[in-house]
Image 1 (tube, rainbow, N blue to C red):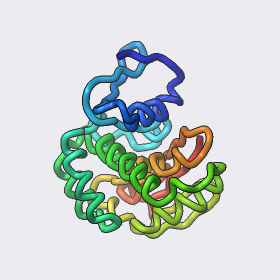
Image 2 (cartoon, rainbow, N blue to C red):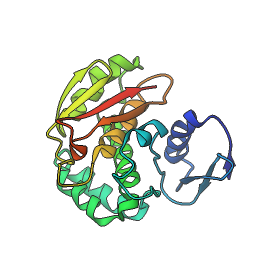
Image 3 (tube, rainbow, N blue to C red):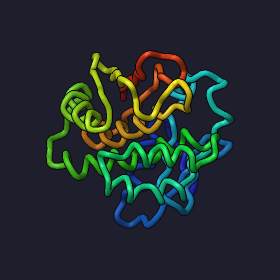
Image 4 (cartoon, one colour):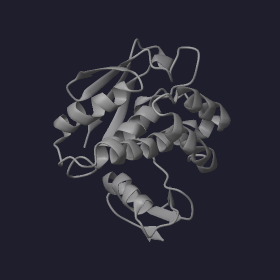
Amino acid sequence: MVIRGPAEQQLALEEALGTHARVRSFESSLSEGGGAQASSGPPAARAPAAARASMPATATPVAAGPDVRQVESALPQLAKDYPRITPWLLTLQRAVAPESRDASLQLAGRRTGVWVFKRDYAMGAKLGLSDAVKRIGVPALRALASVEQHGEQLHIHNSPLCSPSGPSGCKFFSGYLEGLLGASIDPQTVLVRSLYCRSHGAVDCILEISH
């Protein structure tokens, strides 16, 4: 199935298709014409263009799509041991090819965030973005890391997934917040951009949330 439309609505469309009760499996890819093309497989989360552009060009090899098989293998363990999931995420980082690392972490984050929202927050009313970040995003993320909120930015101190000697794990937190917050606001498109990362020399990892 080939779908064409505004690029900013792609994540919302992927989430709607991937979680629909009648869709058994779903995976998206970008066609040369700019549309999203669906095929069999679990839902794939794709990093926003702004987030990709903010990282140094030499940080990772040429980006590829997520390793869906590895992500699907990790998800039951993430659910079983949540919130003590850092060891499983580090294992996932090592298990996938470098060019698939970011997309795989973001997919795992989005799937985990959606699961946490349905488990803990689905009964609440729709919120504006600022309230959703304050009431849902920050408390949920604090189960995984030390976080401070500064407006629409979240500062992660000593990120367990990012270190000066290793690859960045910020894509997991970006995907986690997109999945977690996406269903709590109206409209449902949430974009999380990584501004700074410990793996790239920053003191803290800083994520900016918008929609």
